[in-house]
Length: 370
Ligand SMILES: Cc1cc2nc3c(=O)[nH]c(=O)nc-3n(C[C@H](O)[C@H](O)[C@H](O)COP(=O)(O)O)c2cc1C
Image (cartoon, rainbow, N blue to C red; front, side, top):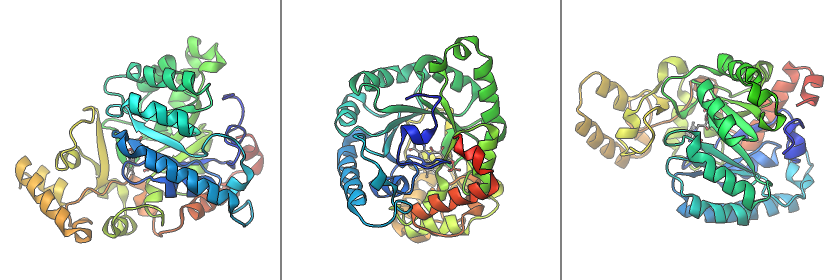
């Protein structure tokens, strides 16, 4: 990837400002990822920490891409018609603390996703070196490397050790897992850019400079315009796509997203949501942001023990949809911008609308350079 060239020349079906969709564990499947890419964004399938069922998802994505390419309609609605490259026009995201490289690499070689996204190494970026080396060597560099980080320190570590093509800068507002201690993209994106610019080893060598993408709290054109103004070249949205037609989440979860407001108050980053689910392998500096509900409030108020909270959670699981919402107990991961998400839409429509809103806020000549 030529890091000085705009996103659409590396990912030819995309349209600036490029909106990527986060590889949300158990949520971002081939239907969502291909719909986002067909609308001119970059969709990511969640490979997560367990790669054993990834091949079926990649096969399905291949089939959907073939269907999009063969479908009628204007390229404005279906930009995959414009794409004749050999990489799959969707990426795959992996959780570095759990995913197995030996299982993942043959799939990456066979299906050639346009990008591999790495997040949350057990210790540091050094853990991700075998992934980056393996992918680059075995795919001749045709699969680009995206690394998500949440601090200046982790950004520097990733750039020096991995030289990612794209650095996804995840701010504190983001839904799902992120650093327990973090800043919003408003300061984090420019601080990382300034820090990398000031680092002689990085600044002297253009091939070390990744493209910067902002994630966390972005759900519409107003947020995207801000992220681009801060210096990001593209954005990632996760929470916004929870209210899309293509996500296989329970109706109760989706309803809780639509109904939530005032995300700074009604969402919280809390490791309690991992413990009640028995999800204990995350490195300790990460915890998930989700809608505040009884699982969190009862525990911090000392009304339940760890064990009681776990058991109550198992009971809530049996309830299904009514187990969600502020008075429910089920983990409902979402970011602070959830209060701006009011409508369930097709994912492609979300991408097109957000792009249009951004265009009308920013001058078109700024977008032409992205
Ligand atoms: C429900 C949910 C699940 C997520 N799962 C993952 C994941 O498996 N891997 C990952 O790298 N990021 C994951 N994230 C974080 C996203 O990569 C991204 O940083 C975040 O969604 C951006 O903030 P936003 O939700 O405000 O758009 C998840 C986010 C959400 C909302």
